[in-house]
Amino acid sequence: MTMLCRAMQRETNVQLVGLCHSVQGLGGKLGRWIGAPQEEILCECAGINHQAWALRFERNGQDAYPKLREGGGPAGRSTGRTRCGSRCSRRWGTT
Image (cartoon, rainbow, N blue to C red; front, side, top):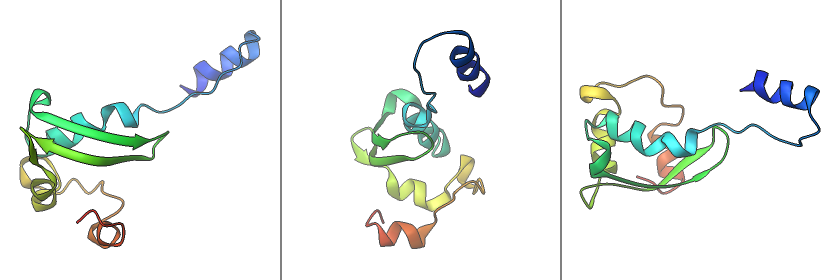
């Protein structure tokens, strides 16, 4: 994305900013981590550019956060990609 934005800024008069798609992809990613197909997931999130927060995460109308906390990754294994673990979750009231 950086290269595209840089080219647009150099070659055109269009004012733009490039933003990551983390907000749009968060629900699908969390769903995959708990082994749920996209159509079973409801994820309300907020944020911008690598700062996506799942405000609500459900599978078939049920809170899916507990399942996420059980394994945190595909097939119940930790992905090692979580940057904010249980300590942060407790601090921000998401446990």
